[in-house]
Length: 406
Image (cartoon, rainbow, N blue to C red):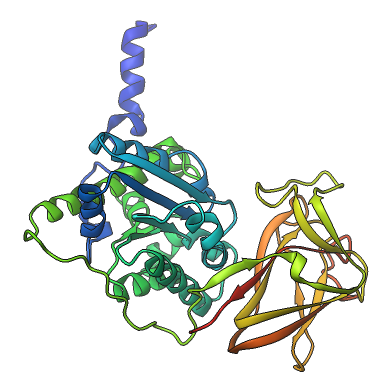
């Protein structure tokens, strides 16, 4: 017997887990995935005392894409309609903590000094195989850089979900990227949100499924709503704590000693025009690929220092304790040779698992822990290359320099 249309719709709605309830509205409490620590009193104090409020979102594609970020911005505007908000979307696909540390000045501080900063890197740190110690250097560098620009900035650290993190939790393991985030957040008394564990736990509790509801590490609207609801839980809880705080309580601005000897807290871009070309390199003022491969916004139609033949050589003088490269790694990306001052020559393959069809933004740290003084980087193209690469090219978008401990 054919069901009436209205009854069929009702049955469809009942059968759809995404429509039965708000994401994350099951038995597991939101509080299990939020660590308040020092709270957000500084932010809410800024809202009470200032007219213009700046909120920045620093992350990869999950931050860049529409979803939780837009919902969070709308929520803040609705909560404080009398305030003028500036929202900085500093999300760039494929980028994790190391790129964030070096681009923070250009992509965030040059657009506004944040009162509230959301930081997301755990998915790309895993995908890009960022070294564990480097994650700590970078995450700590972002925090310290932000707090030196605004000692009262409130920072929220967030770990998003991916299939590998879900598998780790299923085996009783805490993902390495989450461990590092929590280590830095605890040291600086920052709120943190572990959405990777929340998704894993709710999947285990069968509140929803990855295949039908969450769908991808770039979350479906269902997943974006889950992320937003947990972020909102933190904001609501922190605001209640602020409202019950003792009147006249002081701002929390103390900056503790760095966890590690190296902190990328003065990371910055240096123009490729600062290089000294010896042979084989050329500066292309408005680079774009000729091979039809994809690009990322901010890494096309920009100045690029390019070499395509072996033995092309340049030097770059810098002052600091760390140096690296921001390149676009495409189908013909090769291998570089490099040395610092009179040190030994080393090699580095710049080709990635995604390079065959995309000129991917790729960040590599060449040296760290240097004496904070003037150094010279020597960089040349190698004759050797990744077997999957079509050439021996290097395209530098930025030099990366950390000015060191001063």
